[in-house]
Image (cartoon, rainbow, N blue to C red; front, side, top):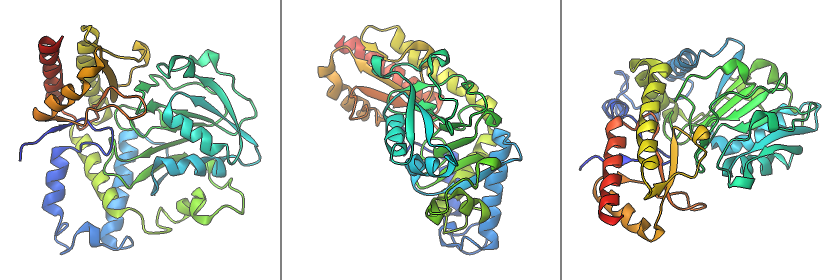
Length: 360
């Protein structure tokens, strides 16, 4: 079967090297006579796996010692409710920056537990930009400030970490964590679903400053309390063991490629190639402000939307799949995460040029 270039926003493509290694180890991991899928999560073998995953993640992101890493289930969406339950403490409200579909969902869920102050919004221009920091109307009494630092659907990305003073900054980094270096110390909590740059669906990673753990009220469900998971080293219940193992293989792959500094250079080059194609054409257009364009998720439209179906079908025939835009906004979207090779973006650009030549 011919290998395709998979531009899905998630679950997304995984590095081929990782898939080959997982296939090789599927039936017998390191000579123990069983698959990782069959291991007890409390066995010596699996504990060695999860400990290495944590060590590699700390190394790649230069995570300070006073931060805990939690390996959870439920996707990033589960954190929309767990965050206010855990971080409010004695406060009654939190600040949220509204930049698209995923921040909208986070705001709606948080509203069930606290007073949400929408401190800034880009709704006025259809979520095509990141509001400038000086325009934010932050509440000095807020328990935390929440951002969605890359909106997978709309294709906007924070290019800098906003300064919010002494209030903890919380970020949903689901679709760009591990795509570039991050100054973790500037955040109180970072969370991400794994199915973009980290590994297969099923794993949610939290990186949280220790001082923020233990603020939940006594009536919160035990499994929703970060302290429960921190005290049990992510083993309060059975964690997503195989997804953790796969994430570990991805982290090792990233290290072999030179870490996040090298990965960022590659991602910049891929994004420049694709945006360059869009900007040089009147046949395609990008709806996102140039300074806020995501390197990971690139939405675009054809000038003649009646050609959308033909564009997708011809692309599919050439091994360029999952290019249809999210159902809420239409158009096209190319997600070019870490595992998307340069040649995949090059193939897409060449196809786009040819499609414009024959249909423009």
